[in-house]
Image (cartoon, rainbow, N blue to C red; front, top):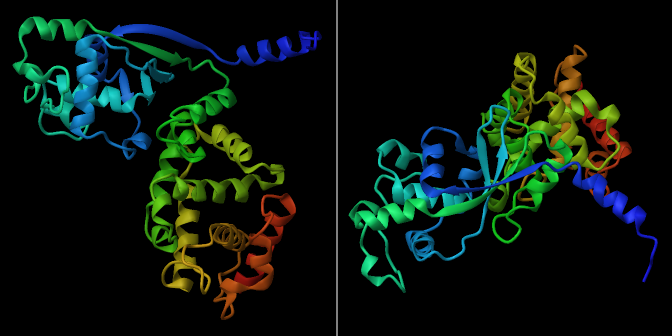
Length: 348
């Protein structure tokens, strides 16, 4: 066995210093108070993820009533001190569903009535009951149960924070890089990405496979548009790190009107040409890499004072454009080549 361990220890110590976490054991009563008062938030990006059915929710409640171990909840600390649930959304949502005493709190988890326990194997006498129908001593004991909460501090290195978010939910719901960015780099720029991603006519331009409709693909396309348009001289690959850096730098940017107007104008121009989704013959979903280059190319034509021309017939299958948009596309040379060719095809 090797004995030269100091370099290994140095690397381990250096990486640990990037992570700043705290651990708390909080009662269910305290967690529900935090949820009701907005101190414990559930980010919109996670709301479209898998939802437990009532039988699964009931099993969690049974485990807590019996005092069985329950996995800890992982949260990220926002700059205002509030927590955002990253891992444990279903557990927190289930607790709200079971204990909420207001229509507003129930609505926050998409429910209109409290959870009525069902399918319990051990506490069979509890089946059919809501929290309000349980004996008072049982209710008090339940609220005193605690959950371990691990909180990632807002002091943590952003790059490390991104990596940690990616590692979470490895055994359940996997998050795409853009969904992780949406949780980490929140702000006006992120809000604009989401709005533009689902605005017309851009939404119509992009035909995705069903599995990609809710994974942040549309938002990442808008992010790539701005990153490649404004910052591609710094692009050296890989794409994920490049986009992370760009989004972090713009996370607090509120001067967005010109960007918004340019993107909307470009989307309208390309939609005018395609009159529907951008597609290559024989290719069902939209070829995203190709469309990204076309959008950026169109923006540069407009920025240079030109007009967007109707490209020649069959332009979607242009040999140079397709060649630079397929295969090893994540190089600076390929990026420049496809944007340059898109400009040639679109320039009046």
